[in-house]
Length: 299
Ligand SMILES: Cc1cc2nc3c(=O)[nH]c(=O)nc-3n(C[C@H](O)[C@H](O)[C@H](O)COP(=O)(O)OP(=O)(O)OC[C@H]3O[C@@H](n4cnc5c(N)ncnc54)[C@H](O)[C@@H]3O)c2cc1C
Image (cartoon, rainbow, N blue to C red; front, top):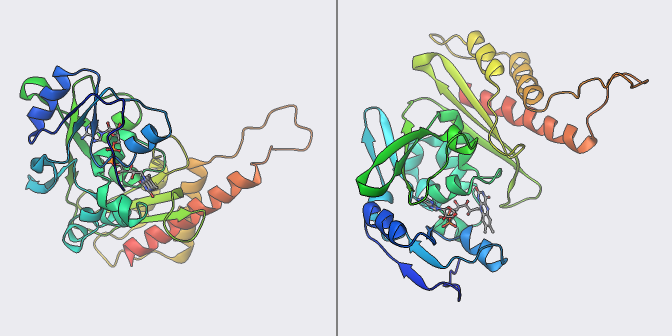
């Protein structure tokens, strides 16, 4: 994607460290951070945003890679989807790599970043259900070299927000060394925004299955009862296989937890109210994605 400096922008800072970027934001409170610009420039071009100044994050090398730390990967917010889609990253966090490979056409994947995906927090953000299933933590940089951590789910649920002058620096992801899957349905063939997505990770050390459903609500949904139920069926010390009926029941359990039947209205003469056909279609899609994701993770 070609980004140009919007005419209203009076200053563009291009810091080379995270702390310099935080300082640049502090010095210019009206400034907006920009990473790959794929979301931000769309908003500018559509007239929804007129930033007076920009702080570009693309020259900050410390947030463009990752490092290992205490059984976790510390991912830089500036990692692009293209970088996360490569085989070495896929060996580390397969579901996040799969989500990165599915995130839009190549020009978007080359420029768009993990941090931008999180801060934009669009319901269709492909990285978001994966990070929710992995129970990732965000490392936020603030003035004076301050760092604080918050669960990704808190940011997505607006229980926590980036404060003025703060930047998302890193994402801490546990390395589970077990199968994980990301599947996405779109309304058309080829790259497109998700109409529904499912991230599913196995956590053998905790004998857990964690699943998050994306794109059907403002933030990813975790069907916790379905996770616990299916985890109790798995023979964690054996072949970890499940009968097709159990996979099917898991899909239905996830879908119904995320898109429940409407409550009876009381005055309805002809029984329970029905979900509209379009919603039923999404529910069937979620059921199919969850069933397939679990089947693949256990195969
Ligand atoms: C045509 C098109 C198709 C797309 N398809 C998909 C898709 O299929 N799946 C998908 O998930 N996304 C898709 N996107 C959305 C977009 O590419 C992603 O959300 C991308 O990851 C955004 O990253 P960015 O670096 O470009 O963010 P930017 O546009 O640079 O920034 C987005 C927002 O995040 C803020 N920000 C960025 N980095 C930081 C940081 N480190 N700290 C604090 N704030 C920060 C910016 O201020 C801005 O508010 C698509 C976009 C387009 C235009």
